[in-house]
Image (cartoon, rainbow, N blue to C red):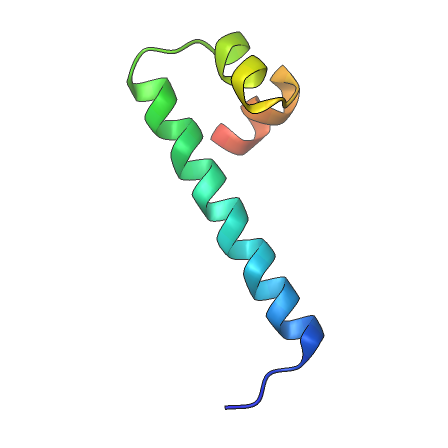
Length: 53
């Protein structure tokens, strides 16, 4: 099926965001604190908290 560039880009971004969310959740379940996750991922602590919500 034909997808537009914009649609493909949006799907790719959504997939990437889902992978980051899963990674952060796994890190948290392993006992890592928000500050460590943020430092490793080069995100702010606020961004990590929002993703984990």
